[in-house]
Length: 236
Image (cartoon, rainbow, N blue to C red; front, side):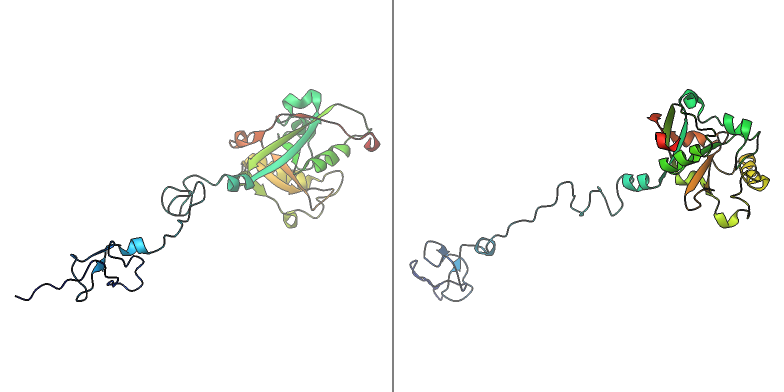
């Protein structure tokens, strides 16, 4: 029987080229020889390969690369997207009428550009400056009252838009013609939506809102707490 080849323990030859520990203490001659007479290094490949720093994930991210527990869909609704879909409006009223600002009593009694007397609606503006301007044109003679401004928020899905090209040719005339009153009367009677968006007669590029307090979705409108508001004395 042919004797098993051996090499002295102090041999510096190793079975792997570039071995970092070729001395006799790190090579075990008792291991199977990959090449005749060359002992295999006790160090494994993982031990000889320099370790690389692990990349850490950003705080809050999961293994799938996002903040959701599962696949690509988020685990909760996008709150920012929901905020962008909320429309804002403003209404300025006398302080003594703040508690009745959204019952439509004034429009029901006096009427307006977009409703005739007997139809209950509420007039608002898309921004506070336009709401102030709409109030100033009705102060005749100008009298200083204490006013409050009330902010509103509502979902875009509650709005019906009436574009200027669909309006009659005399929609900006003063006093308001019956043709514009019929638009609001029909909209409120049919209950098509809780909010109607209309262009401003003074600034057609700006928008006003008409609210229907009798609509079932009127309760979805968020009404903020009234805040004190005053007109500059130079405007009165």
